[in-house]
Length: 198
Image (cartoon, helix red, strand yellow):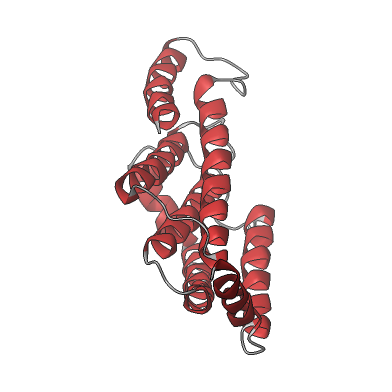
């Protein structure tokens, strides 16, 4: 959380400095390291809490802290949109959206089988929403240019490799959950954990 907020402040200062003295390579800038590290750490935390929910062995102590942390990462990714050299910013926003979904599902405190079904539904809606935004990219890019966000792609481009890869991963996870859930795999895992705890 502190790293993300410091990254936003550093990004503002660096963009001001670049306007005065342009630099050719800023890949190792503090905000780039902070953005990628924060995204990696929050991804690990959300993955751990969701898997802990499935196996029922951990309870998150503070919902507020989780929300502040995940939204600070999303805010840093959004701020990185103004950095022309931060090529990862849009993909990072996509992943930040998945982290927000994961945090939301974690704090619903659902039974494992309901958590899996919820992930399937929300994951499918998220993929559909991302596809709709990609299809309507021309007005989105116009809106971004009004906010002085540097344009990263030509509206005539037909596909983004990272978007195809992330969409394929989310769809594969949804399909695998669809195939496993009717067989009761997640219910058996939950039942085994309950019997082990007694």
